[in-house]
Image (cartoon, rainbow, N blue to C red; front, side):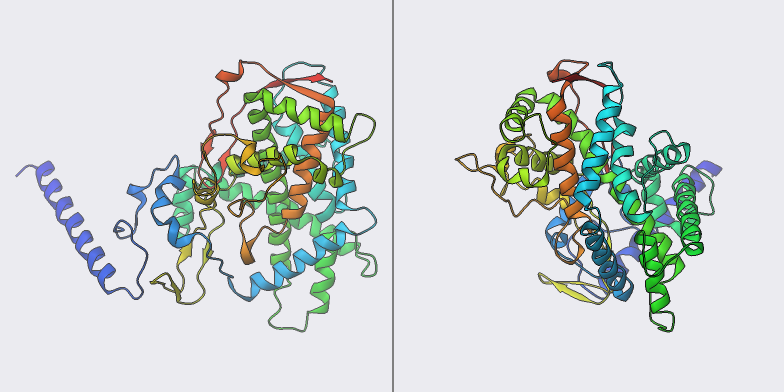
Length: 446
C-alpha cells in the first residue's frame, strides 16, 4: 500500500476514535447542557464556527444564555464595588464628569476646525478626545493631543480591539496555555496588552512615590489608599496586580467602546442625511448656537436621544458580550450548566430581536419613539449588558455619546465623499467586537 493511502486510513481511524470518545464524554458528562452541535476533542466546535462572524454561529444557543448574569467570585465583587464607588465620587468631585466631557468636546471642535473642510479620517480624533475623559479620572490629567506617548497608546488600544476580533484571537482564547508558546499572529494581542500593562504600571509607580492619602488625585491613588487599609486582610483583592489590570480595563473600555460608537454613528448619519437634518433642527430649537450642550438637554430632545439609542443598537460594539464563568452548577430552563462553564451573553441577539424591534436590521430611530414623537424605553436595549454585569461606565458612556454628538452637530454638517446610497456600513471586522469601517469625511461649518 502506498504511503499516502496508509496515511489516509490512519487519519480516518483517528477521527473516528475522536468522534466516539467525544460522543461517550457527551453522554456521560455531568450536567445537561443546552442543545448544540457535538464538539470534537481539543478543537471543540471551532470547525462549525463562522470565524468572520462568530456571533452568528452562537445564535443557536442564545435562548439559554441571554439574561444569565454570573458573578465570578469575591475578586469581581470587591473590585467592581470599589470601582463603581470611585467613579461616582469623581463624578461628584471638584469637576464633574459632565464638565470633563464638555471641556474635551471643545478641544475636539478646535481640532475639527483645523481640517478646513478637507477630507480626513476621524478615528484618532475621536479616540483622543474620548480617551482624555477617562484619563482624567484614572490618571488624574488629560494628554495633549500631539503627545507621542498618548498617540502610541491609542494605536495599541485600537490595534488590540482589532486583534481581539480576529479568528487568531479566538484560538488564543481557547488554547492560551499552548498558543502562547507557538509563533504566529495570535501573539500580537499578547504583546500589545503587555505593553499597555507596562504603561499603567509606570503610572502606578509615579503615584506611589507622590501619594498623599488625604488628597487622592485619581483612581490609582484611591486604589493605593484602599490597598493600605486592607494590607492586613488576607482575603483582600487590593494588590498591585489587580490595580494595574483594573486601571487598564477602565482605560481601554473607556476609550475604545465610546470612540468606536461615535465613528459608527457618523457613518449612519451620513448614510441617512434626513436623520442628520432632523437632529440639526432639534439642536437649533433646544440648544441654539450660543451655548454648549448639557446633559439636561437630553430630556427635551427625544429625537436625538432616539437616534443615539438606534446607533448603539445597530453598532452592537461587543456582540458576544464579555464571557463569564459559572461559579457553581446552575439550573436554567431545564438544563444544568456545570461549574466552570464559560457563558457568552449574546447581547446582539437581543438588540436585533424582532419581538422588540419592528425591523431589526434597518436603521430607524422610530424604534425608540412613540406615536407622539416622545422617547420610549425598550427592554431589549442592552448594549451595556444587564443585571449584576451591567457596564461600570454606562452613565459616563451615555453622557459622552449625547454630548459629543450634539456638540459636533451643533457646529458642523457631515459630508460624505461618496453618495449616501454607496456608503458601506458593514463592520470592517466582526468578532469579539464590531470594528467600524474605515472612511473619510468632510466637516462643513454651520
